[in-house]
Image (cartoon, rainbow, N blue to C red; front, side, top):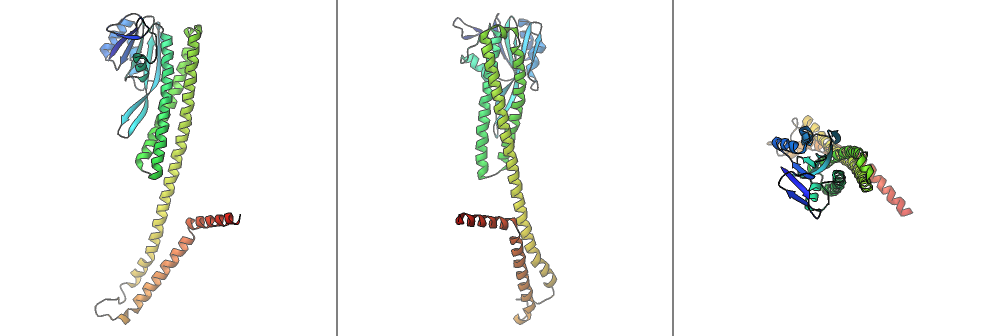
Length: 332
């Protein structure tokens, strides 16, 4: 899809039907024919227009034949079965003496603000347009990071009640999103610095102030992303330790039960087939003395082993430590 915009008499953006000088060409997932047509109208190379149509394209800048291109990674929120997911998508801002061109595979929230008039831009000032987009994109990163932090707190609150694989997978998705954001912000910062070195920015004080805001917002977003990434990494390690401890406790209990059941099973295997048992046909009660002796010995051995295991278990030592602490507190 290709749209043409230009500034009206009051400075607001007005959508046009065709290409004009000093206009903004907004291209969203364009076809090959549309790319070829825009290239002929604007004089920008078709390869440069198609550069941002590759999802794996990294943030970079390129200057060729009077056309300047800045590819910037933008945060994208996508709806999925497990809630919103966060990723990045490249967007190219290309300008020459004729026009400004933006190219992306999907619609961009910052560009929508330009179209609706929430953010004022000028089609005849391409550097100002580019810096304004970079500033809005950095603010969009900050917004997405806040959403990720809120989702992280919500998932942690759910995991305190019940720990399921769903919540762990969601935390893993958030961790992956923060890695993508951190990489994209670092690449975007390098592109910003390239734009700051152009003569157009150095010549105007307004552009200098705007570029400073871009650098500040980008660095703030990068620092915030690194903080959230470290917090989430520590959280994942902590939950991993909790899961490991729970597994160890479960295995310890199963081991105790197995040992307790092994003693009567072993004794029953030795004696069960070689002696009279109660309620057996033709056997009097006084003839079952050995059976009751074996049962009694089994119960005594099982209880003794259970006491020894419980006394030597970490839970017992932990309970003793807590009791000693309570006694000390009472004394104090």
